[in-house]
Image (cartoon, rainbow over all chains, first blue to last red; front, top):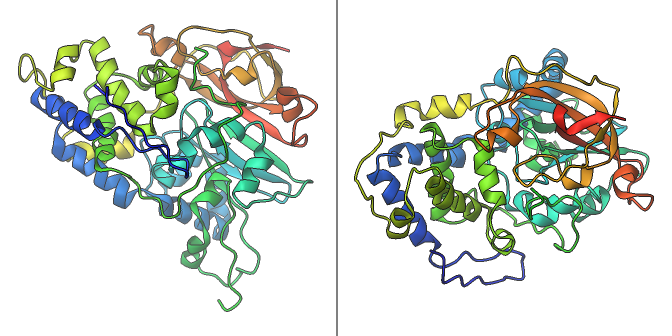
Length: 211
Length: 219
C-alpha cells in the first residue's frame, strides 16, 4: 500500500495526496462492506450531514442569541453544552462544550497541539489550516504572531488566553458584539458572526454604515 | 509518547496558509474516510484514544507528509489489523478472507441519533479530586512511551487550576486496553513566561491546558 507516493509539494502549503490513495480507500471500503462492518448508505448520510447540516452557521445562531438574550447568555456560559442544545445542536465532538467569552480585557482563541480537536456541532468540520502544523505548533508559543497572520492585531493591554484543547472538552469563543448593531435583529446579527470569530482567529464582520 | 504529533512550541513549519472558500471535503475519498470513523466506532472496533494513539505511531515523515484524512486512513488500515478485525492480507488485497463476519451497527435509521448524541468521555464517578480551583500545580516530568495527553511543552511547568471540569476517562489507560480510570480533568493556566521564558513574545498572555489529575503534583 502506498508504495508509489508521488507528493507534489505546492507553493501554497498543500500537498497533493498520493495518486493511489483513492484506490486504497476504495479497496478498504469494499472490504469493510464485504465483511459486514459498515453500511455505505449510512456513511453517505454522515457525509451529507457534515456537508449540508452541521457547520458554522449553527454556532453563529448561538452567538447571536447570546448577544440579544442576557438570560440565554447566562445559561450558555454556565453550561455550554446545554445552552447550545437549546438551539438544537449537539453530539459528536461537542459532547462537553465550554463557551469562552471575549471581553474588553480578554481575547480567547483555541488550538489543539496534539491532534485537531474542534467543536463539530457548532462549527462543523475544521478547516485545513486548523489541522496543519503551522497553526498547531505556534499558537501556544506566539499567539500574537499567529493572529497577525490572520490580520488580527490584539491591543497590547488585552490578555490573550490560548486554550489548548488537549482533553475531551470542546471550546467555542463568544466574540464581543460589534458596536453599531443596536438596531440589528438576531438574524442580522448572526450574519456578522464568522467561523474564525468563534475560533478566536478573527472578529465578527463589522456592520456596514448603510445597514 | 514523545511523538511528532506533539507540535506545541515547535518551529520551522512556516506561516499559516488559509485557502479562501475551502470546501468541506477536498476529494471524494475524504468523504469515505471521514464517514468510516462513526461507522467503525459504532461497531465497537476501537475507542477514540486507540484511534489517536494509532495516528501518533505513524512514521514521523509519513505523519508530516500526509494530510489529515490520510492519518485516519492509516488508522483503519493498521489499527483494525492490530485489533484482529481485519488481516494484513485482507487490507492488501481488498478481499474478505471469510466473507461476511459482522453486521453494520450504523444504519441509515440511526445516523441522526448517533451524530446528535455522540459519546461523552465524562463519567458520573471517579477518583477524588486532589486539586481545587486556585491551586498551584506542577505538571509531572514524565515521558511515557505509550499514549498520553500531557503535551511536552507543559512538563515540569507550574500553573494555576482555573476550572475543574469533573470526571473523564483517562486516555493513558483507555488507549491500551487498561480501563477507563475516570478522574478529574482541570484547565490549568500557565503564563507565557513560565512556558517559554523571559523572551516570550506575549508576556501578558496565558496558555490554558486541559490536564488530568494524574498528570499533576502540588507546587
